[in-house]
Length: 322
Image (cartoon, rainbow, N blue to C red; front, side, top):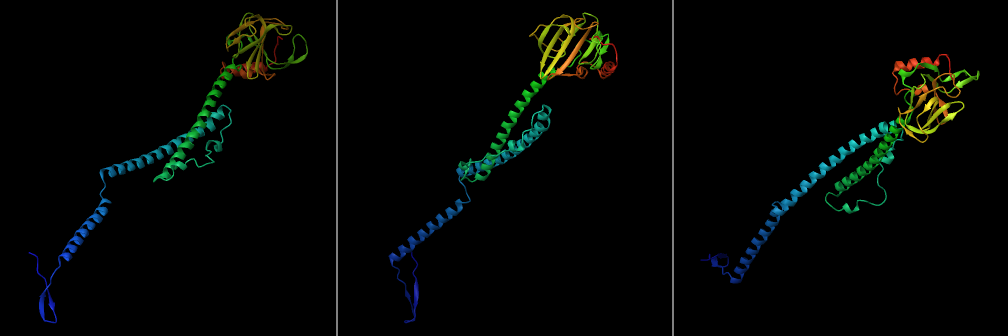
């Protein structure tokens, strides 16, 4: 039963009954319902900001995981860049210096990318700044790796060439030390035994019995294998890199013109042919057409003591044979 409401009438000094119209009752009821619905809707909106759906929670976890991976990637790029910098330093200051190659300037190694905005497509995202920086760091690192890779390829080529050069340079005695009788004459001015004039001796004379084996002192190609009035039976070897060696006064030539020989290969035998007064090998070393002192090239098979003894013998005045 609905409550009956009254109001005080001051004119009659009595309470009078309030008559409520049905239309007002309905309006109040509808207004109340709307108020409740509106309050509930507003509450849902506010509540939904704090309570995420499963899908939203999954997206949020994915974003957090992506952020974590980006941070880890950034650290790995920084670590890789540090390692690459150390390799670049060794490359310039050790590898390239050892093989006599010019160092690569830092301006070339660390040059950036100019021109158009390469990373415009990465703009407009929540993490655009970080993504752009990471992409730029990766591009720079990739470019430096390409430069370093090419440098190492060059170093490998230089190393192979250096190995060939070291094998080609005359580095051993053309006659084994145990087969030598003695050193007859070194690289110096002396009186020629036949011409009786003072003449510079451009090589070294090794006295040994006739028929003693003679060996190539470095890898090369025989460019002459013949006989001459001065050198008798003689062999010339072109070792490349400007080096040539001459082996004169042989009794018998073993190597043929055009033949490729390696260090230690037999090329002939000690003799007394040509302008010579006794069995010996006259040996010369030339670089770019200039005769050099052969004693500076015996590092391949002489101990320091043996080298010192041979150097002393070469400097002494003694009998020469050509």
